[in-house]
Length: 245
Image 1 (cartoon, rainbow, N blue to C red):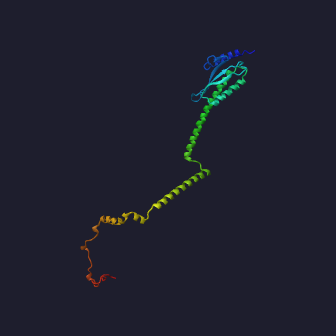
Image 2 (cartoon, rainbow, N blue to C red):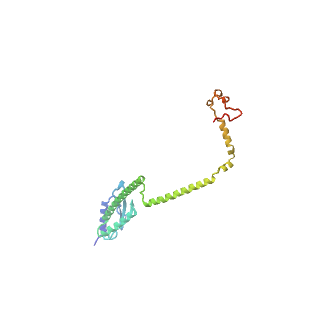
Image 3 (cartoon, one colour):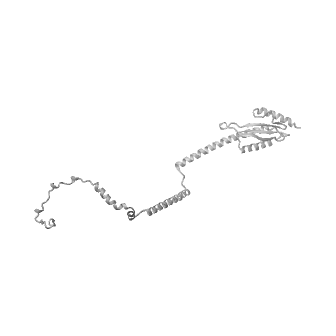
């Protein structure tokens, strides 16, 4: 007949020696025996780790029956990671029935935590590469612009034609409004009473500012005038007699 108590006692002593820093003080409870073991992954990027504390409670007929287990606490684990660990524990417990199994279960969780750290590292590297790729694509767009296709050209042309039509309508409206507001010459004359004296004022101002260059004229005494009396055809009574053929 199997002495379950003895087997459980021996396993607890072995676990305490294997996990001296992570095994709880003796047990959380004596009947049934309950204890925790803290499992930490290997250091990942920037010395980051993931960690979980597993709580085990022996069933009466352990190891012929699987122990009860739960995630007592955790650090840096996602909800899906916790779910995966619980599934892993169930699978390992089922496969190791009849044998002392806590060490096997803890070792499986340790490996799972290391995988999670690697996945985190891989995911971050992929995110970094994706950001670099997006930045590179954005930079290319600045130099090369968007490739022209029939679809985006037609879309651009439709918007351009609509904007151009709006500009033409606005311009025509402004010109029409300006035409309505423009006065004819008669309207300007009738509305501005200063226009009827503007020409006179201009002539007066111009006359006051006229300068005569006297050097352009010869003195009258120096001019040699032809004596009309020497002309045999000259007739002082006839004003047209001084005209020549």
